[in-house]
Every structure is written in structure tokens, then in C-alpha cells.
Amino acid sequence: MSNLFTKHPTDINETYWQHMCFAAKYGAHLIGAGLACIIHGIFPFLFMRTASQTIENLQKKCQNRNNNKHESIGSQNVRK
Image (cartoon, rainbow, N blue to C red; front, side):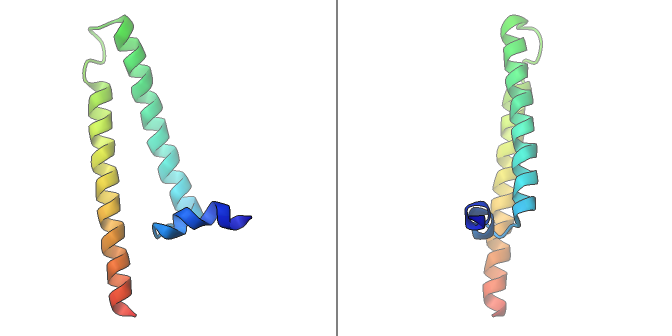
């Protein structure tokens, strides 16, 4: 049963807790962006770029994270 919780994090070279923290932070940012969208829909003069900027920043963060993971995994394979 524990494999269900650890397989994916292990596959991307993270512990369960590292993965959970990253996903929780990422999700909280998305919830915030979603709330900004709803408020913007009602009050178009508020949060005009909040959601799109949040998504752009999260995409960059995720891409950098993936690049670092691949580099880390590659360097571990070289050391073996």
C-alpha cells in the first residue's frame, strides 16, 4: 500500500514529504489565482493580471524544478 504513496515521488527523485509540500504550495497558488479570477469577473478593474502572472510563475517554477531533477538524476547515474 505504501508504494501507492511513494512510487511517483520516488520516480521524480523526491521524498513523499517533499512532493506533498511542493504540490500543496502549487495548489494553494492555483486556488489564489482562481479566487482572483472570480473577483476579477465581478470587478474587472481588480486583479487584471494576477491569474495569468501566477500561472506563468508556476510554469517557470515547475520547469526549473523538472530541469533540476533531470540534472540531479543524470549526475547520480554518472557517479554509479
